[in-house]
Length: 320
Image 1 (tube, rainbow, N blue to C red):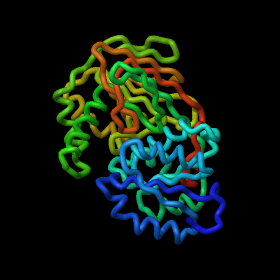
Image 2: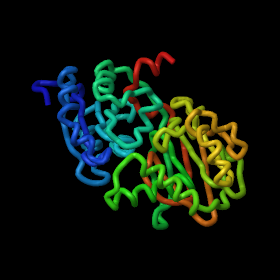
Image 3: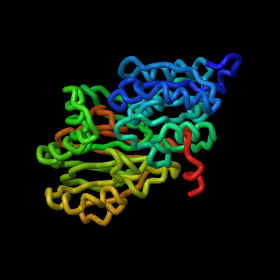
Image 4: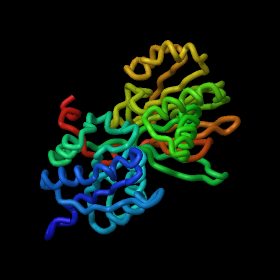
């Protein structure tokens, strides 16, 4: 920490040493060098176990820090956001979050045009352009107990969490590489079965039939760059919702590029909705992932929290 610096003006830097298969720890000397060269006062801490980032965030805010840098990926950011909603010292919007991306997917940063190059992401922090984004409150069941979490980017129900489960299994086996998520997607597609699902949006039943997958988002990107929610606006006070009815493998294969180019709603089996409150029930229960983190199962409730968290973005994003 810089001597004699106001703690509220000091950036509390949380390093996730396992993010990006350990890339954050490996590249930390370069990252901290860039932070110092940009005259950014900081205090450095390391997370040591799952949910430790959430604990560190609560402690930091209670200690007076109002600026937090995440050296990690989407999962690390997810924990910081949840920490903001646990602490009771200040409104969540009074703490500014920045991300120096070292994760594997880095989907949240795509929404705001934050570069993956360290020098440019640190420069964005120094320039200080910020934006108040929406946050989703998510209620779900885990081991038959009701739970609640907060989402900064995208949640998946059905197929997406089945991919995440396989991906996490690969990582637990010590496998590495960006190709793992694609491998998990292919394996999951041929083993996952569509389920009877009911979806209510703002009190209206919009679907009651077999459903393959659901994406619910504040942001546009997930799954390492796919645009499942290409029309999402991060501060409009609404979730974007994409429903996928059952499809055959060849219907996916010949339309795969539309998942990446923002043209997904031209696929006949895909529907788009917007709303503030979403309820999802299924028979049997299906899994939920939020910001790439496996959480629990249906029934699910999503509620929007308008402009609840302040984040560092690029000037180009604000100018668009």
